[in-house]
Length: 453
Image (cartoon, rainbow, N blue to C red; front, side, top):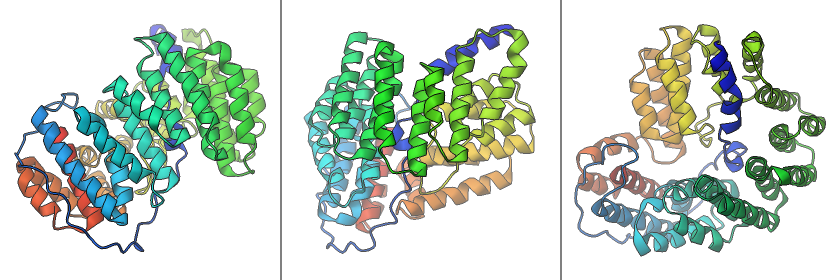
């Protein structure tokens, strides 16, 4: 590894984005709504439908006609959820990233209806937390004023804190003072959360944020987050959250991080905390080419415990040993899990592996990356799977796609429906309306996402 490359490592580590804590420690999704028996109602039909071709490029904004058509589909799905309890979890989860991309007053009206569904007793707290996290992630990059208005009116204090943190991150470069104000608002909201576990999670995420934009307040925030976390009963979840506190403390005070790590009892999480301390120490050290081998060895040792070792590994040659270390850093993949790795990091790993020479290590890594992308985006993950040169990997991705679709109650009809929507939106909507309420709601939102793409 060259001297210039080694000197980049501290900046890489410091700038690496953190996953929102509600996603990082979320439990598995619920097992379904088999007991729901509300009668099915006929949804409000949208207006005149027009087949709109997808806009090329993921960042292209939708046209007014696309936004209107998508809003009609989302409104129909929301109406289903209002009338059928079995569709509420589906709509809470699947509409989150679509609503911010709509336009005007209708966007706010549909968002308010969606929030009432998300806050209903039929939606588990962890599903709601993940949905709000997705919503604010997209909204904060779409419309600051809209995001702020929604965050300020949200009845869920922990989710409100997450909204303000998303605003803080979105305004860091454009308005540092406003960014720090949003962080303070997030902290105030988190302190109002009545339940200890979500309050501790929110305070930990705030501590991570303050380390970056208000270092003079970092120690107090870390101590506060640690104090709330220690109030939880001894458990693996408590240890997991303490490991997150260690990650924040290590960026600011290695000695404090080591003291907090001493309270962790689960061996695997002890390893995770130690890996985070080592990685922080790397980022705070003036490195030279003579220490590059040691840094690479530390990164490989940290990889089984902490995915934040991956940016260092991506700077090394793509030999089998490094490909294996990256694969070891990836979390367990379950059809019922929330997406545990950000899209941007998945893309970097995918491009890195694609440039590697053919080997079983590369094939296994690409298969895992494609399956992780399925958790982020069913259809993009499927597209990655189809590109795999290894037939076994293609089979793995296809089977996992079906498992995720089944877990999300869209069934195996979702894949052909998505293909149909690419050719004819009107025909896809007709097919969607033949499904039971929960599957119909998800299908309608799938088509809405296709229209907005």
